Amino acid sequence: MKRRIYGLENEYGIICSSESKGRRAVSIPNVVIYLFREIIHGRMYPDVFLENGARFYQDIGCHPEYATPECDNIIDLILHDKAGERIIEHLSISAEVRMKKEGLPSKISVFKNNTDTPGNTYGCHENYLMERSVSIRQLASQLIPFFVTRQVFTGAGKVRPRSRGSYAISQRAQHIREEISIATTTARGIINTRDEPHADREKYRRLHVIVGDSNMSEYTTYLKVGTTSIVLRMIEDNFIDRRLALRDPVRAIQAISDDITCTRKVEMNDGRMLSAVELQKDYLQLARKYFEFVEPDPLSEDIMEKWEYVLTCLEEDPMRLDREVDWVIKKKLIDSYVSSRNLRWDSSKVLMLDLQYHNIRTDKGLYYLLEKDKKVKRMVVDKDIEHAMYHPPETTRAKFRSRFIKLVNEKKILCGVNWSYIQVYEPHQKLFLSTDPLEPEFEEASRMIYSI
Image 1: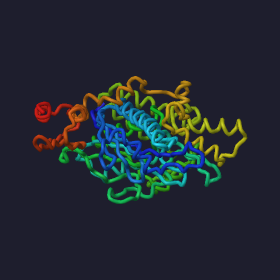
Image 2 (image 1 turned 135 degrees about the vertical axis):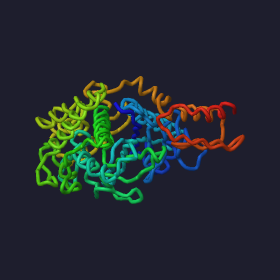
Image 3 (image 1 turned 180 degrees about the vertical axis):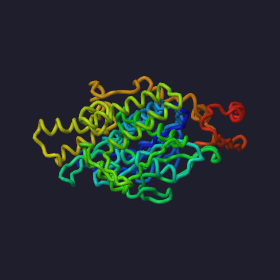
Image 4 (image 1 turned 120 degrees about the vertical axis):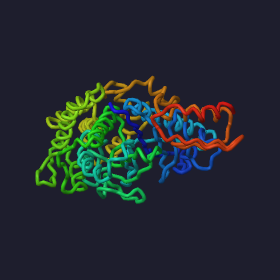
């Protein structure tokens, strides 16, 4: 598969409850401070690069956010996405211990989802480094139909109590307001114009995708990123020759999310009426044709095989995907619970079940209970996730950043770190720029740093 930089950013929701009768729970801003205390070492603002090359920081709204290090293959990306969950799980347990010692016994729950109980939404962002020669106009016309419809296999699922307990495929779809959003606005678009490549601007742009859900399923993440990467490759090679534009993409993304049968048809610009599955099959057919002209590779073949499998299941019976796709896994779990207890879908117990599916605690989260019972399909193994908690990808810029962070932590060197640079403040001020994220070594900086 063509070498490309991938990144995932997930914002996490937090609930804190007091374990002392009659005592008010610690406020979420203070919980976040406790969460970061183990790793920020006296910094005023919670924002730090970790020894595995990732970034962990507090985003707007008191949501801790974990951004994976730069990865150039999808399996590494899944490993580092899951490593983020394990790191935050560890920090939340440490925070509970610290709070108890300080007379604030509390229970912290952290959720990898996209909405809280009032209906506010927070993000899962995908990042793809791509060729600068591709214009935003071209990206929008060929990617928007893909993003609108891929939710049928990438959605995280959501119980909607205000709609009498109905169930939606995607958590983010109902919050999308426009086709293209400007990076400096708060509006949520299907395509976002934010372009900070953290690389050579003459060669690269960063596609910043804000339309997707956070996923618990490794299989879903694999398909989400893998299919998008194949479509991007076709766009970069000017291969997509079909007109796939939707008449009203914003209305379509919400209509598709509201239909768990995956049969609802949406209107195309040319007047045709197609379901999300049918439009995804058009993209898959193009991908198959593309690899008749471009030499296929095992990873691309596997992605297309799984892509075809899920589309066939969605067409015949979406519930067949109860081991692979998040929204189906969760719905089947809730169906069983509701049936066994004779509950309404807008019951508070059902809403709590929906939330607990996304709990990242491996001993409490419902997804992880299913995983332990081998009821979900996996793409990686636990020992590799544990390795990714402390080690970067070996083939990207994150490798050098990791070595640098380990060194400065050990020697207490005053420095600044960002995605594309490191800055040493002592004994002499020196700034090192790294504009190629695909290059794991940084010889000039290495010579200077290891002489300290």
